[in-house]
Image (tube, rainbow, N blue to C red; front, side):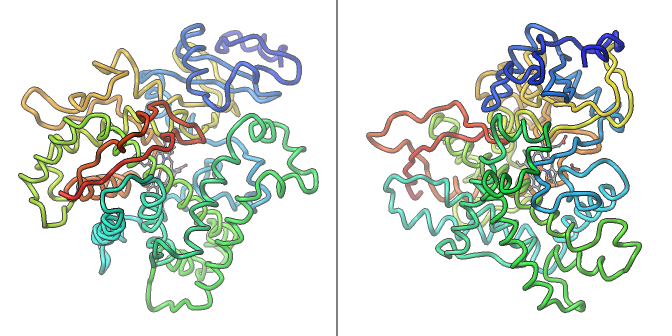
Length: 474
Ligand code: HEM
């Protein structure tokens, strides 16, 4: 490695590297964005790391990240190989979307996901109606707490997870359903299994993943989750009627029927399992974590909560359910939701990219096959782009006349070719769930409890530590 570094005279600088382990001890894998922040101060916006034999380059700040993801989009569009997913069936042509290598199979599957998610918005019961319906179930559950203090985590997870169940399985679960409770728990555990030093080490020393029994022991929840998905998909295939489309799985099954060409484009059973898993993992935790931050910030800033409620009362009233059309008339609420995403910093280090070819960035040379971390946290809190980067300040998204504006450094969904394809759905869920909750309840700090922590817990997403609240009906 040292030899190669010498050869690349304009390779980005970085901390000293130890034999075998590289720079892995320079990073706190339970708080990588903090470690990156410190290294950015020392080495600048582009620095290099080494996980064992794997070269990594970390990009920081709005200008650098935008230049890579938008101006040199294809150079940075690949993903590294994730050995830790192999035990679930991840491999050539069965890579789902999120960690799929850049190429024609990923393009086909991504196009499929984007167009199917869009079409669901136009079906008989639109996605928007389904979110409003789910928000109603969520409010009934909250009401049943009768103003007593409780942790809203599980209920929010259920509501958001049900949206993905709607899309993938064509149906929702009752919150009390045993299978559903198990499913939610498995998601949480599987995210934790992927965080920390060990999974990073397994990814860069894949031989360790192939030791018999290792994946089963370390990734127990992931394995159980995949078994669950297999059971559901099996039932789906048995009850499938090509004349009638229930959900995204049915659309995928229709594609699979098209034969060899479709199979070569990634439309086969094993990839369906991976895509299903991706929609759950990418689509549930991110949105539910954002909503949990949103309520936490409302507890801590009651004056902001009151202003949102005043806008809701003025535009929607107390009875009519909100619709997406209302959003245009509600700049303050919209600004608050965007600020929750910015300050909450839900996916702080994004999803790793990999260079698709040799490339240059701001005078540095980055060879093909280098893992690239886009430090989204450093963009959302970039001191050169935000007036008060380290404060919760909805005015970041309002102009002098109180109209909604979106600064260019707002990149919680990333940018470029691999930008989040679920953004539209997520935006709709965030707006409809948040306004329904604040229309029906005022959220206050639970009496007699310590003030909630504002630092986050990192497990791919950055989520709030558990907190209790009281929901007072309005
Ligand atoms: C990728 C954020 C919701 C599906 C991503 C990425 C980010 C992100 C940062 C990585 C982009 C990159 O590699 O540069 C978020 C946030 C969400 C959210 C903050 C909610 C607030 C959703 C939803 C879905 C979804 C609801 C689908 C139902 C995906 C998929 C990818 C992805 C499939 C992989 C795209 C690819 O590699 O081509 N998301 N996401 N996300 N997201 Fe989301």
